[in-house]
Length: 117
Image 1 (cartoon, rainbow, N blue to C red):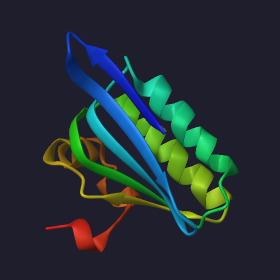
Image 2: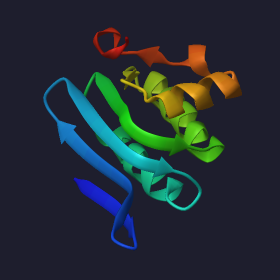
Image 3: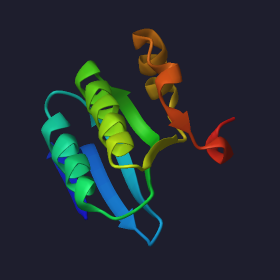
Image 4: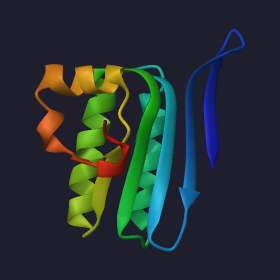
C-alpha cells in the first residue's frame, strides 16, 4: 500500500506498508502534521486486523512530526499492546527524536536497536 499527499510537485507525506508473516513495516517520509495525520491514523488503525506479532514504523525519512502525529504513534502503541503485539520505531530522524524528547515521549517507545546510532 502506498499513499502520498503532494503539494506543488513536492512530496509532503508518504506512507508505504510492507507485510511478511511476522511483521508489518510502515515506512513514513516527509511531514506528519495536521494536514495528513488522518491518513496516517487510518492506515495504522487498519493494521489492527493484521495477524502479525510486530509493527515496525520506519521514521528515517520524516522531516517533521507534530503533536498530532505523536498522538497517533502513542495510540497505535497502546492498540498494539492491547492486541498482544509490539510496536517498534526504526531509525527515527533527528526531527522525530527532537519531537519525542521535547514532548517527554522519548522513553515511551521501543526502538529497533540495529537502527540506532
